Length: 126
Image (cartoon, rainbow, N blue to C red; front, side, top):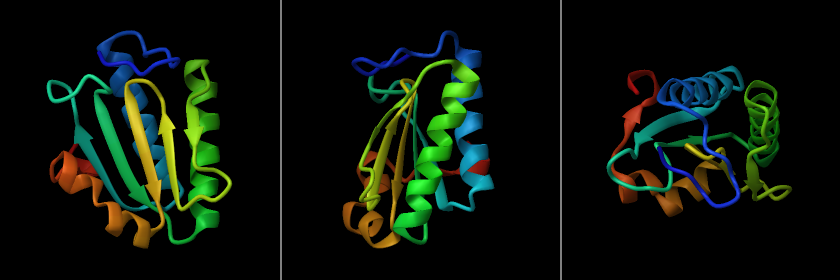
């Protein structure tokens, strides 16, 4: 199980999967666009999953990030680290075992994280 500095990992593989499902469900509820889940276990020690998604505007990206951070805190009892607010062109949420990148579409295209880490899997297949 991977961990990031200053963010406590979720205990146990089942909890990691529960966190991953919560992230995907929250992004789906908030109508995130082109959500991709990249399994990192065995590839990197930073996390077990990286989730990349887009919002149609900075307002939507900020709203998705805020709601997701609140849901993680309510469900797992710890606050994830959030970087990139209030600008919300690219918001990074470090939930320990799951790293979430939320972008405006133009910014996502520019950085192309999926290609850097792999092509990922559509969120429904992860």
